[in-house]
Length: 342
Ligand SMILES: Nc1ncnc2c1ncn2[C@@H]1O[C@H](COP(=O)(O)OP(=O)(O)O)[C@@H](O)[C@H]1O
Ligand SMILES: N[C@@H](CC(=O)OP(=O)(O)O)C(=O)O
Image 1 (cartoon, helix red, strand yellow):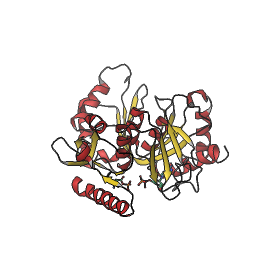
Image 2 (tube, rainbow, N blue to C red):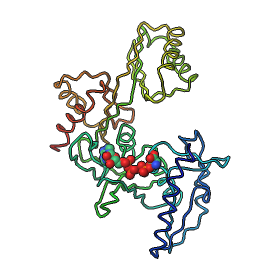
Image 3 (cartoon, rainbow, N blue to C red):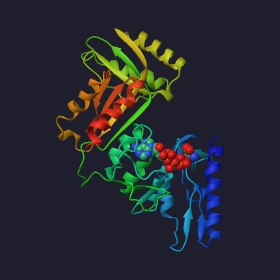
Image 4 (cartoon, rainbow, N blue to C red):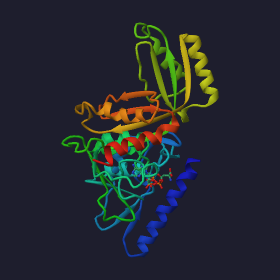
């Protein structure tokens, strides 16, 4: 399957190389096996192997020619093709930018910029001019599909600024994503993203805070079933574990809940299948003392029940958990109150 999926990208890159050469623009086709873009992990969710960067440093680029490189896949140590996760073309671009020590990674897409919120939710949202790597990572993780969250890692490692621009309007400035150092947040909020594809497990056990080992045993159960979790906000007697829905199915949920019942004997256990997360992101959030209160007030006025609030450890994001049906209203309410008027 991975080879099949990669084939489209490969043929497309070969075609573009032929067209450019035909137009008199000297162009060379290079692909992962030619440069040693090595990946490991699962065939449809691969990760770059650090050896790639050593290999890329050896590649000679000539000033008078362009390189066309197919995106989305790499070669495993056993010489098989493996692809990155969906929309992973951004990842290849970032790997090459780091490997070739670029001054700038220009990433072309089909919108003028990254907007304050998803244009499918907010009508004509304002464009973001500049933001930090960490802000972008939080926003793309939570639903800004325009730039892949994993694609920032090579850019961060190589300290390469990223400029997201429109293929159909390259003269527009787009959005610049830069290192945190030296960045000063000018707006109250940098962006609002939302993802619907979550589920949560609520557990209550009196004196949870006093008993050692409860969370360890819980983690052992998830680990045994190769299930990763996303967030785990907790209180004195209870905790909620939030998952991406695609790591679980109904049968696995039953097995895990049964094991938790037997091994941890919680006072209450509830599987919440209907879970959405809205993420409000801004560098410098920790200095905006009333932000959390003023974010939540208009949401409450709309009669939306908030399941969870989590101010991220990074202190640049506030996560709001709600029922799935409320996610768009939450985003619209925050946009209208904080961005439309800013
Ligand atoms: N905050 C956002 N800003 C801009 N585009 C967004 C945002 N959130 C979601 N999108 C969507 O992302 C799309 C571009 O992403 P995608 O199609 O994956 O790009 P590409 O294939 O160029 O990597 C846009 O057309 C837009 O609909
Ligand atoms: N074709 C792959 C890789 C990719 O990101 O393509 P695009 O840049 O066209 O979204 C996918 O859709 O997952």
